[in-house]
Length: 499
Image: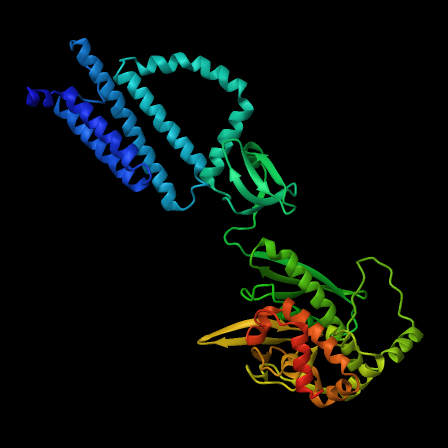
């Protein structure tokens, strides 16, 4: 009796459904891969069981069957079609996971899932309930037309969203700019609209139909790097080639721009008022643009001043010649280059005029050719070196790697780590161009510290601020890794100079 009961197709079907539901929905509910495998096994087993008993799920049932058999067959077919749809949907989601862009493909996923469910429903209606699909579609056509006219705007956004997702002019995370100057990073795209996060951290929602018709620029494609151009106007007081070399030094000394592809300088025009140049470079991504421009403008000022050049006014602006008397007065107030360099260094901001005069008088001028090594890594310098012109690179050797820490431009300085702390240089200092420097030696600074010991406290406080701001340049000094107290720095200065 029990064997005959187990051979009944209805009993076999019920056992298979209960086991499949228990395994996939209870035992493996937290394991996506295991649940997918169990669904596939259940669907294959159900297919084999139905075909074995002569039930073809994708064909209408014979009308001569009994009511009980037709009911069982209908339920079995419905479960078969629903599980078949679930398996297909699981494969669609699995494909998007392997593609590693599930958010970008959500709209396409929803569209494919909708088509799969619609196909399953129509198949159930046709194969289980024997309703002609063609008649049903024709009958619903009038209703579809009315609904389409009522939802014309929404449908336009939906189909535009489908077209945009198929064409993929942008993806989630890309920075795009529209022709009406609306710009931002794509954070989500759905059936109706695309959401951008602007530079001011505002959420901009743009209908897909508007995006499909407008011209947009994707700053994140084909890669994240972004090109920037800066226009500079210099008074024509020297040869354009010399001005171009100064502008090239500006780009070489910039830390925020990419070194590959190599930044370029192009002379755009020249007239009696100005030499106009275009500085073109790339940044790692759109978010670096502002920082790179700020650094470029700062370096422009320093290099132009160091080269003795002057900026020109805007095109068409009226400029007046500099008065000779005021120029002479300025030269009397600024005795020379050493004095001007000292005035621009925060490290010596606490010095009196007499103390600055003492240092300026004893500063030594040195020059270095391109590729010359100014200081080796870990070597202790006994003088502070101030950049007058040119560009140097500070690179650190760690094992088999060479890491560029920073680049220095006119007005920057190095060697204070050895002069005031007694430590070696954090990296090798190499000239990238022809370099002119001024040095303040230990024997020059020592008399000032002995005459005014409180100066050690002031230098210690300024050094502590610089270490905190430029921690990566002092990483090799053990006592400075986590920041050193001002008292410790001051004590070290006093110890070195025997105060």
